[in-house]
Length: 176
Ligand SMILES: CC(C)(COP(=O)(O)OP(=O)(O)OC[C@H]1O[C@@H](n2cnc3c(N)ncnc32)[C@H](O)[C@@H]1OP(=O)(O)O)[C@@H](O)C(=O)NCCC(=O)NCCS
Image (cartoon, rainbow, N blue to C red; front, side, top):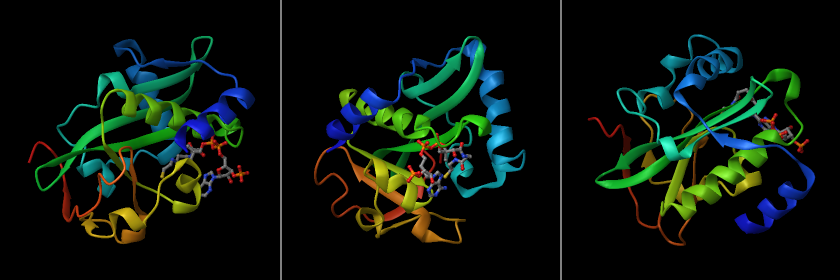
């Protein structure tokens, strides 16, 4: 199913997705401040990333000449001792939102994550949006995200079929 979405978006949305370099870090932080506000670090999803580095090979950006227009990164996390990926944050420059950039960026990231051998991905967000790229609430009903008032925002996707089956517990930061 993921492959079918990817082919469709590759055809209709043309843009270059590249890996984030150290020299892009400031522009990425600026875009996240614009998209989420400077108080974004208080969110439950940020506590899962505290003192943990994003995965370099799954940190993507889209640029128009030298200007950053979108960012997507993945972080490692745990439920019990089982490793998983956290998708996000994802952000697109406000004036370019609604043109399919976010979906295409996520499909690219999810295909790469699969290719790199990851089995499952969780995120915190609106199911109505993320179901477009295969996320659902059903597969993570037994996983708890501390500090998040609305547990319905915790969503998941199996990159390998069955990889979330039976997984129960609290979603944890890998640094403890
Ligand atoms: C969320 C975001 C990354 C989406 O990127 P985008 O390039 O604008 O999205 P796309 O163009 O690929 O997809 C647009 C579709 O998603 C829908 N959509 C966008 N955000 C949504 C949301 N939060 N809830 C439900 N649907 C949403 C749009 O209505 C549109 O639907 P349509 O195709 O049926 O018209 C972007 O809007 C953004 O940066 N927002 C601010 C930061 C943010 O909220 N990040 C996500 C945190 S959970």
